[in-house]
Amino acid sequence: RGGFWNYFSMGMDAQVSYAFHTERKLHPEKFKNQLTNQATYAKITHSQGWFSSSPSQSTSRNIAIAEFAKVKIMKNPGQWEDLQIPPNIKSIVILNLPSFSGGFNPWGVPARRHNGGFAPAYVDDGLVEVVGFRDAWHGLVMLAPKGHGTRLAQAHRIRFEFHKGVIDHTYMRIDGEPWKQ
Image (cartoon, rainbow, N blue to C red; front, side):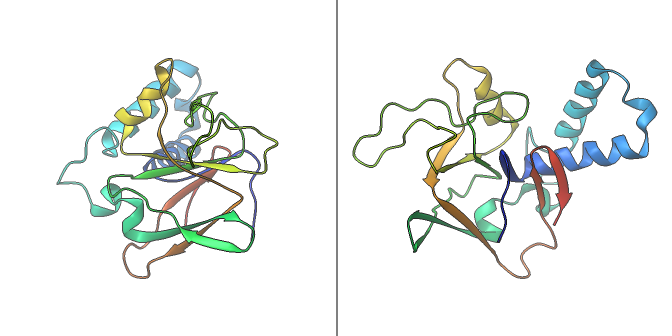
């Protein structure tokens, strides 16, 4: 059991964040201004394969979330259901507020809920939003006026069940703090 304050992410975005964080801890003298930090982050993003999956890269870098974890959500109290994650999603973000990573809104603003569709995100609605991303190009859609990631679910709770032996570890981050799990 656990919780988070604002957002949780798992997959390639957290892997890039972890690599940046590790490099910054090893060489703090190289991270003295925002422009250099952003350029380093972009370089790591590119080298990690987040912009394009190269066959020469290790499979752990290109693996889709659905290949190594089953995600279950609770929409109604006491009723867990499997969340169907498209096979091309390599990163998911779970939000408890309508923005993350410097103010981006990966959920976007969906039309009003109708016939089981998605509702706008609110901090006090008791729901978390689950958003998926295929790659960094997909993430850049957030820069467009109505851009957003792939809306996967709105739920009261979420649970991960990892498939043993598929990968050795994955990368995660909560509120910008990355780690290797």
